[in-house]
Image (cartoon, rainbow, N blue to C red; front, top):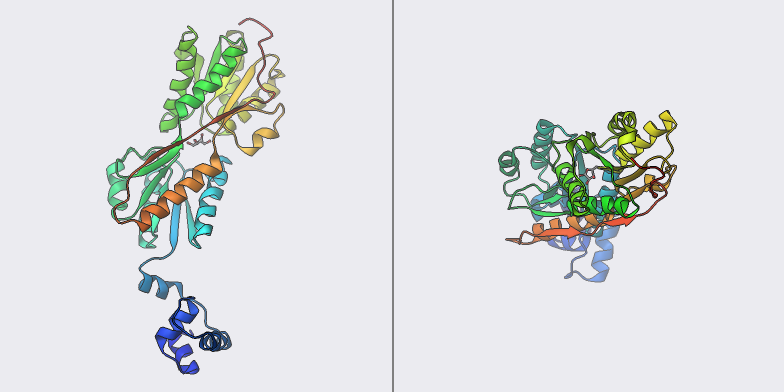
Length: 335
Ligand code: RIB
């Protein structure tokens, strides 16, 4: 391996001059810089990140731990974090923990051993004390889901308000019997979106009865299974609010399997605003999260925390936006 010592010796200059010249720092004459760069290229020298991390006490690497890389919401989120890392010439490591609490902790411990400079967590881990122990001394930002840890900044949306907006849209269209396909109970945002659904119904003087709620999994399959249960009782509903877009996509498939027309026989609204919703038939009415901005803002907050001795913890709520597609319309029949 060619080191800075080899370059200094071959160029007849000091180690300090080589380090400054190859890191673009001032204090070395132009002619000497060009000579050092020429010798380094001839010798085949390449920056040794491990050596640099030891000298700079930073690996210029951050990590993002997310639950499900197969859900298109997360890759769009990753793009935002990746852009923030690219803007600072940092590397981004990804860990896909699934909704597996133990794997989440193992991923965290592995990232700590990699000496990452900071981590962004999307987590509903039940044992926040354990998470805080592993992350002790490492800057952490919670993204999308609140860690509940007062020590971590968090960036997300107002899930209740977004869900309330979705259901209020259906109520404005004239729907009164609105079912909800909920997210997994273990995930914090599921309860917050169900609360938003209930709030919109109660504001309209409607009962948010538990019989109107069917459990989903945040995935297409869960939306399909819950959809079949709802379609078995279709006379009780004229509309469905799905806790996320993949659930809504599964519900569309259930309707197609039963020959039920959306929105003519039942209206549908989702949550997330993933690109896929522009290409479903019908296009999906949904509550769009600013997904790229969520990721990018979390990255910026993390880099601020890394470069600040005692960073102030912040909670940033970004706005959601109702995107009206073709899946919601006035009811054609009374429930
Ligand atoms: O679609 C995945 C869901 O998990 C999204 O709604 C996002 O908010 C995350 O919590």
